Length: 269
Length: 259
Image 1 (cartoon, rainbow over the protein chains, first blue to last red):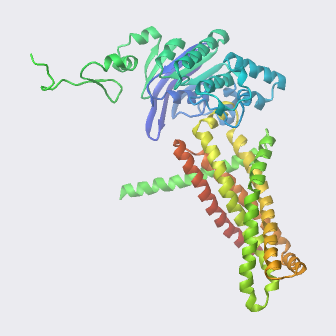
Image 2: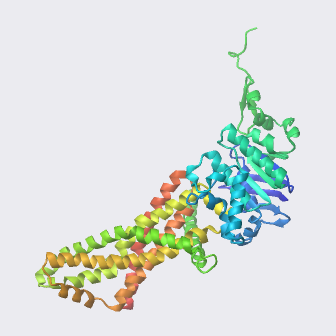
Image 3: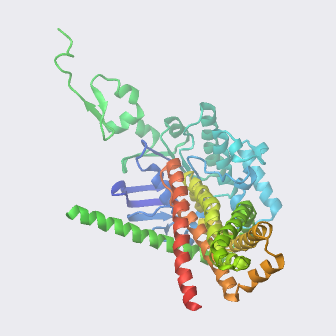
């Protein structure tokens, strides 16, 4: 269980999260939706303790992590894994070394057990034949899948995904979405997926949270989201419909600005 | 007026913060050398990269420095009929000053900027965050092995530079100035005292520390994508070169005082 209570965060004097509260129950997949620069990735980084909030409380499995020293965060992170937006595979290591990185570091298992875990994880993402390849030899979709395999190899209870399908073609997007769904069904993992890709959100979410400029606009199920009245949510979900209406423009808050037609533009009676 | 004072205040705070962060990074990297895990393989890898990889440039630096010193020294000593003592001049100036400083500047250009660009690339591609997410301390994993390698290999490279500079001086002294080899080498070693050798080894240890830590600090504090990587690399090179020259002056002052 991950719980944010009234979390506030500023970057260079600009608020990134304002009084943000959310809850991710164990075994659920929660999707955090929102436009670019809305504060979605900040939420993931706060969960991992890579960033510290200015105020508020963040609890992971009941344990407060705000103010926890870096060395104590290691124990919290041991139960988590993150799939970064750009995959963040280690350039100088092979796929095998990347996937088994944490296991090699921890030295808790014998080498043959580590090897088995690596192969199992790569089989799960369908990339068992890339063991000796370097990250530079892989395509964007393959890198994302290796990043998921790396996350899986350490048997985490929580996986955090930062834009897992950004920049991928439809086939790779589908593959990643299916992997996220399978992980929830088969492994019953707690997953937090940050995305602005609606297809991914609709496919994998148990619950959705929408963030806009650091504020939580919505928290509920997919059906509730689709029927939400907030113009900013409607614009985000159906920009082609809303913004195609004559006189409607996106305003700086992500809502709609309706401009009355001028005399010249009016249709003659 | 008020805004200028506030700007000055912010700038000064920025400098103080940089010094504080740099000191914290140095302390964490140093402490990392005494805590498990040791990352011995990484340390050996960086020793090879810094040491063997920089061998060619320090060999060239050493040989040409020695040859130039012999040529210039001969011009200065000739009016006094003391050309045969040229090796005294070469050995003392190389061991005390030129060897450590020139080797360090060359290594800063090659290794310091390399460290900065490598860590900066890792920073902008989120690999440093990935390390933390995997439960690894990035300072222990990335900075400490480089620091240990640098502090060991820069003195080794300096000793090689010194030896090659003496050899370069000998080539000019013997084949151009017709100085007897026995005379050259005897005076070269006679001129050196034990504390010259000790001070000549303390300097490269400090320079190795500066080269590595400035490169690591610049790399780990990179922001702004590929432009930031370029800026960090330049910053590491410039800062470490200036710091090498400044600390050389202060160390020399202290060593002269100590005698």
